[in-house]
Length: 226
Image (cartoon, helix red, strand yellow):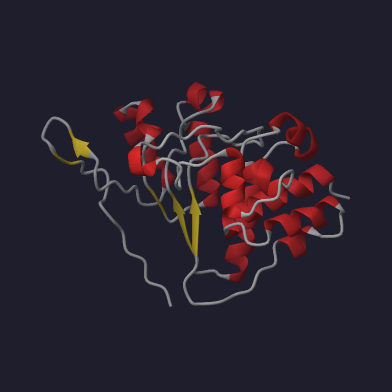
């Protein structure tokens, strides 16, 4: 029997991939252990193009405790409007129930208590489970990595990104773009993109010496589906 905590973590991972639809109800069912993993991963197939987007995992391969910020300053006309709302204001704006899994996953407030109830979130193994389920139903789905992937954990720092590259190579995204990856240094990033086996995209990545687009990063790539 899968544990209550693992159920909730899987529900949160699935919600992150599917966009949050029905998240609260799913998680409550999971907490009651009245929902199997296969049921959790079921979804209605529609349309002829499917996109899977993963971004900003910051090299966190294992589930972690993650608290959303309580402050997001907006200046002038941006004050108090999306995306510059947090905490209770954020929950009220999006109709999120206090104390719910969505409160814990997407908002600040009561973090210590909710963390004890719901446990760690994320984990690339859980993401892999969801991606595998989508691809089984939609083999032509396009999987995109939005970057901030090879940065942010001790393991990534210690291996200069190799641990994350190895893990993501198993997931096989169709393309990737870059941001904080460059804290590894240009030479190391170039070494790693030679390993990944999928397009490395970067329309705004320039060769500083020649002030021209870096030849190692394509500005775009094409996919044909449907």
